[in-house]
Length: 397
Image (cartoon, rainbow, N blue to C red; front, side, top):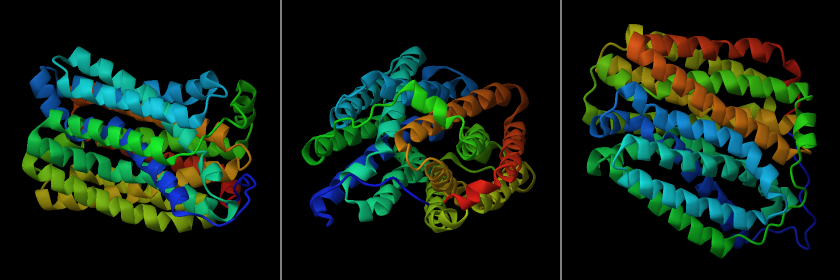
């Protein structure tokens, strides 16, 4: 994968402070993606305490996804040349406030307002963070910095929900949101202490975004992102009800199972990183086949706690490999326009989360969890058609 050149520096050696700044951005993006997905493992408890149906409670995932999608494009356009360090700090403040409101919410309406604020922070932070690696370390270290920063996305995707679920089981779902508020404050302090001034070098304009939409390799990657993410999150939003209703798993066991899902996901992330660099299309095809099979077979073979747990772990291994593969595809498709391409990618990724969760929220109340899983499997398997139509993507990495 070819990457944009780093800005000229006096020295090409990295320092511990540089890597701590990269790690700060990585933990920041981890906290943002975790915030978006945190309700997944807490939906039954939130629905019960706030007096809504499980399907309605799924809106706590849908709302921030929709807002994040538009914020990922709108904020970079709106802030112009605002120092990116200042912007990231402001977004962390908003995230801490939103998480506090979530923890205190007396009603579902207030909870949704807090989730709207969460969506704003997610979209803005992710879109900006993706282009910072080339500014935080010298050129030779940029690939490693990218892996670390986007590792925050992968870690949140596979570990954020399990950890939040376990905290929720131990101290209640409100305690999980309090933990998230504390993490946001900690990252804010680190960002103010460690990040250098980051004035915008080239603000994102609509023309740059439109130009990327004429890039066939990027469009193919974006289409793959939309289908896979919508399918995955359509099912994953209701993974707790699926484990309880289909597999008969006790609620106290769901947290540890999701942690196992997360650990296998990190394994998938680590393995897929090198595979995707050699061929994003081939790697994505393998991910799709395994993930689609796990989702399709869950209602049929996951009827016991043991088989349900096994299929969940396969699910985690497959999806854990997806974010790094999709991100590799997108950056390889637009190496000289990282911020614009990442903004489009974030828009589609977050909108797909929202639409997948919304569709499954409608389906689950009327047709059950089984139908949600089968519909998700169909969407995921459709990615194979997208990969076949973009063979050049495997050569652009």
